[in-house]
Length: 438
Image 1 (cartoon, rainbow, N blue to C red):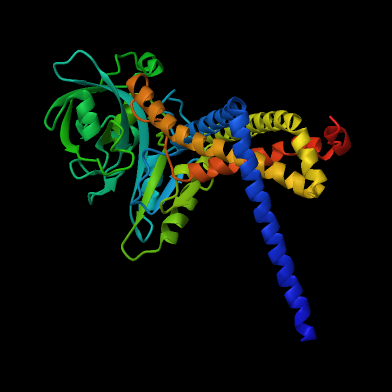
Image 2 (image 1 turned 90 degrees about the vertical axis):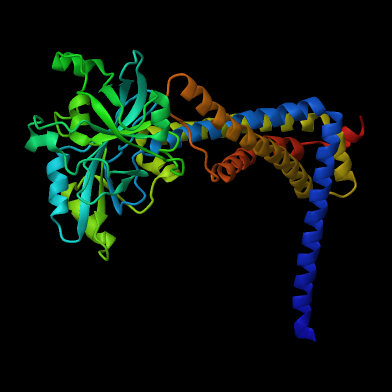
């Protein structure tokens, strides 16, 4: 029996600590409710400021994720090759990042490797499309690809209606025949008011290409081969996107100078290991980033310098502003409640218990603001996309992901923890005798 006494004592001690913490939490929540009743304006302002800061963090993070995600990502490709720190295109400012060069010859080398079904470079540009008989042009995304012999799907769009290969490339001379073929997504068809069989004029809006070529930069007449229903696709279902042969888009936009593309998609033959495609891609582009599987979305922020810098700035600003708001509000509350704190000390609450009550109260206030901020932020992403598509952008510029909620709440709690030292210092230096004697 004597050997069991220490175990019983330990269980009793743990039970006592648990009851004590439950009591402290209940007291802190009651104190928060009382504070809300006595100081509704101050409490509401603090929660609102935290909520607005977190909402801005969510919106900016959504925009950063939108910048980082590549609209040409193909979930059916085994391997994606993108330039280090690049591979994306901003739909807001049309600023290009790093690109891959000599893509036609390089992808041909990759395709000659055993186990490789096909490799296609992908170029994404913003172009202006005019339907025959119309005077106004519409701005849409254009995706240039080299259709393989066996039709495949790239970003939810089939290449079956495009002639295999890239005849206009003509071994780098870019004087081969142009196919005049173009595929429209349903969103693009609605935007330009076109359907299968219609003729379109496609041109690049960039001034430097027109000056270099000395022409009006218009392409030969393109004919819509098909309109793809991409409603089920995460990206192409939202973006007005057209697909044409790579060399024709390169010649139109000036990317033919160095045979440029944003990325290369590599697909292995049935039964072949993805390692075969990774090895072939790494040999062809030793300094590029090799992504396998469905890498991208929010995680691709890490591989895009501009998106990473944007998200980090938003994170730092959110933490600093939240911490300042919470620290200031808590300090003002403690200054008003010094007598209550002194009473707690007088009835037997230790310094650590009093500090725990203030810490729990402060963090609960921060958590309430964070939850409200997540809701506002998700609504803000939808509103941002609505405004962008209605004004300057051809498609949504921000992405919404379930991970944003836990991330934003964690950031708010970190800010709340960083805000604790000042209010805790005020509690610790409260003179009990002086406050009770007032």
